Length: 114
Image (cartoon, rainbow, N blue to C red; front, side, top):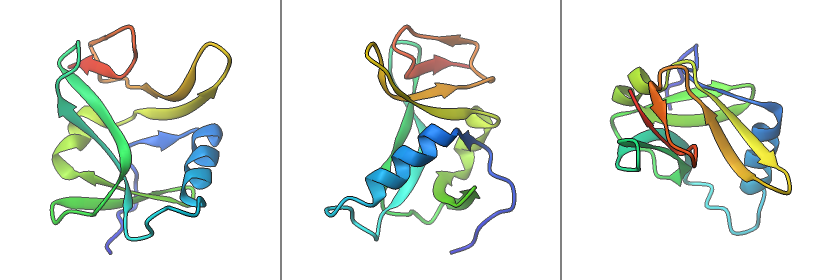
């Protein structure tokens, strides 16, 4: 697997901890890679993708502070400079996306427009 030098997105300490926790669970498929990306849809036009699946031929492998992830090269344009965080509070729990490229985001925080 080829890894590039500079990751287009970053992860907070909380997000790194949660990703490592998920990867350490007994039912985790070690053949899968962490995927960061976008897909069409959502209330603002595009939705974030964060999950585990198989690496595809068009994917580039990145590393951020020991976390390896894959991203389709064409998604970098939309996500460059984004920070992924993990919230574990009473009112909100889950991954959040701070994307400087988003011209508009929705209330749920998982959808955006460029």
